[in-house]
Image 1: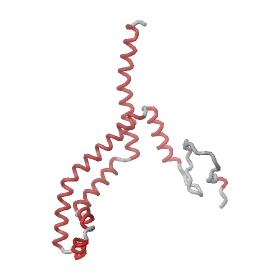
Image 2 (image 1 turned 180 degrees about the horizontal axis):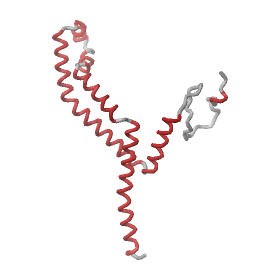
Image 3 (image 1 turned 135 degrees about the horizontal axis):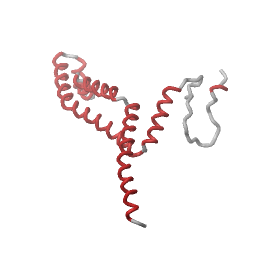
Image 4 (image 1 turned 30 degrees about the horizontal axis):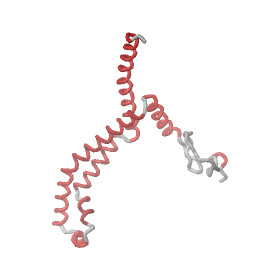
Length: 167
């Protein structure tokens, strides 16, 4: 085989691979945004940090000790102020770690989808997810109306079709 004919083919494949990876990453980002909207996950992390700052985490941890549980039950201002100070220290130390972990897990999810699926497969998943969100209507038995590909074991279908259900 002529090596001069193979070189352009190899170069074309090498150029197409990064473009395909970028397409898959962009589509994977859209899918992750649909599955876990960034605003909601950020709001959840911020709510957790706010609870930690208020002393909820240290209060829950210390409530396991019977002696401290009795002090917590008295609900004294000094105890509440101490727990709030400890909670503020915890939030100051854990807040950046929690935010960084959220960003890292989002990036890892995107990378995982991009490595596991092609851009075309991710587009199909994304389209199916969006269709399911728009098309589903509840029936009398509460079963999904959208068609979803699945593999089931042999045997009788325990669900009645919504159109044939006797009410």
